[in-house]
Image 1 (cartoon, rainbow, N blue to C red):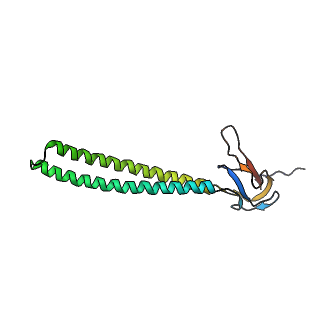
Image 2: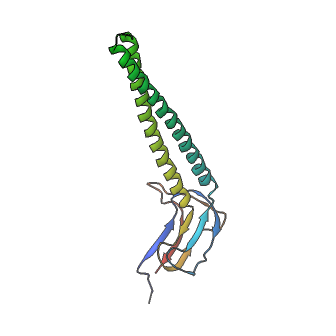
Length: 169
């Protein structure tokens, strides 16, 4: 007779890179959550660091723009009072009003850029987390197709990519 697993999972990677640690052998029993292999995280760490620095830079720019918008609002309030007191010409009042609107718009743009930067940072952190491949279920390593030092290729729509190993219950 033949024995077949009820559940069989082919393990593949969502990211590319070189395998720097391979902690299981074919025939070995693993538990759900066990570390199977590690893909070199260097470039993913760098991406996280770069995106974090980008977010910090965007946050600094946002703080500067918020202060500029607050100053423009104070200038507009002064200009409005002076315009109503017939001290300031209409052109100067319009200029102050325009500056206040421009700085508010710049603040909104900067807030959106900070939100986008945070989303990019989260995506980079997600990729970094995927450098550690863990067992999705408990079972037996029935096939191991890779060795330490090999480069993992991710799949595309028409290409399945590298099947790293198979776990069967």
